[in-house]
Length: 244
Length: 305
Image (cartoon, rainbow over all chains, first blue to last red; front, side, top):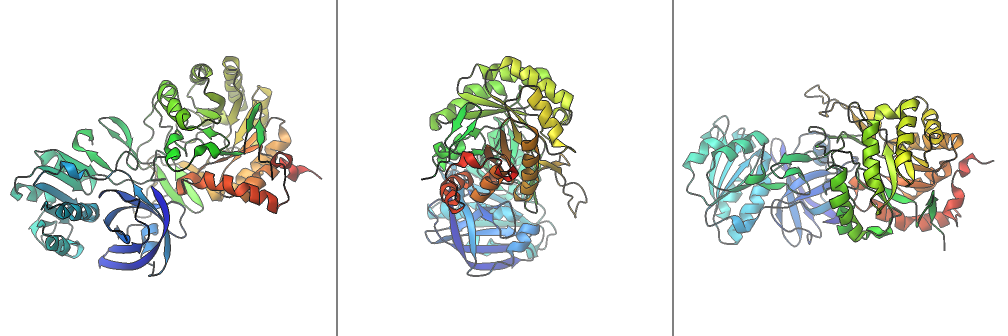
């Protein structure tokens, strides 16, 4: 973990309620896709945790949904503003378990860490299938970018306005043989996915956090190995840990 | 050179900065961030006799100048704290370890303290009679002077370690509780625990926390804590650890002027894992700025003259 001040390069709306924030600064704390950062939003006491969507030696990006007072304030952040950010938090996805044909499943804002993972996998010469689900066509984000990366993308929308009508689980039947599953999305989606897949997998969880680094027990969840902290022991958990 | 050392009963601390229970886990997590031996002491996560999962989610809510928490005393139980957590902390921390104990009955407090009495690595006991986030426990002992006395007497019978009692601010006159604890034999007092609060979600129109209510901590409660430490200092002779919203070296001095012999840092640790480190580093220069050579000498100075 590191604490650094980052400079905002860009803060762009990518769908009616979703934004991509680009920051430059020291990224030496970043280790693996699925990890998160904890952002101090000016005017708020607690930090806000976000999955990392991309990072390189110069900076990183997060995707955030305007879902409350903190994220609403973030939409007003401007190029050149500074942000105090804790980076390199939590345990990310284990790329070594992907096999040759991994299946990546993302729902809504869950596309952010899945995008990061896809970038690393394709960089290693592994072409994943990505099943991504959104409420409606206007909410679809990162589809073209994932296709451009070379991923096989299967899109679902609940209202059928883009791709397959329904939920990501409705599209799982048409996906190819896969060696490992990586999943991030709303809890009911991840639970449904866990019941439908035939191979091992890793699931990335979201939680309301106090600290983001294991101090307060604010984000605890029950697992097969006892109580675990989403921030410190997760946010990525193995299928075998999940008790829902 | 200034002298930052302070005393809590028979325990000498290099400086008064102590992370508060529940905001520092079992301490060793923070050793990854900096050398925690620079701290005066560490209070470990509150323990109970039996393992507790704690309250359902969500347990945390933002509020102006701070936060609400309703963790619900999640901990692995006293035996595992002694066998697993304290040894891990001891590997990276050579300063005093303070155990924080909660209970749902007098017997439970006693059982925990008997076990901790056998643990030489624990220098001091902080008895929490003020947790607002569990039913029929904690705070009910902290709002009735008779029950508080009973806990203090029972605990003092089974331990030779210094016993500090952590008091709740959720009471009309905190000095009544403070005196009851002193009369029952407490070696010191820690105050304040969190203020009972609530947030309601405008969309769901329901309380934001699953527990409905939670404890308010953070900068916003600092003046309340200073006021209560000031009042209690005038009512008792035993030392006070001041806690509540401290987030700068100036706040440390203010709390000590009010009457605190040492301070605990809580919510600030959750905003920055380096909060305590930064306070310890800033303290000497801040003392110099206010013409203070001996930190001990300023305790309760706001009451003089």
